[in-house]
Image (cartoon, rainbow, N blue to C red):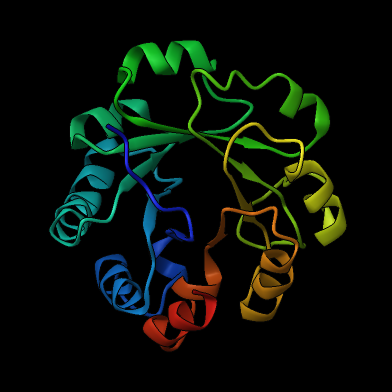
Length: 204
């Protein structure tokens, strides 16, 4: 039985952009109330990523917080992660589901109506939707939706939706006020914060 809470979804940034190590950032953020974590890295060295992510996975397991790997199905399987999050340019959803099995969490990024209409709700567990606001944490991001655009799109979703893109505590409140988001996903708002625990608490 898949159990996960999307309320405050932390996506890890590159270590060079964090004030603390990734593990310490996650530890502090967990004390602040994050409910799920996605390990995202652009490093092509799988071994380095594995060694970096393993202690994060173990810590999250001890706290009962799901651990998701972005894009890298091989890494997710090697780490025995709780799930995988993929984008529109990654492997097709049916192929990923077949690779990870029926019990792992599978998230998919969408940014427009065409992508939303193509979602197979029998294979995907939740959607990451955005960017809601301009973001510096992801290059070549799709056009910004804005709060109203996000709400209009999210209200059509057959699955739980996580808002992502340029969110801080005030913007998160605006998105939550629409009643269309199951959760808020952040990167730099926690990873780049001087106090990740306090930042997570404010976002939660």
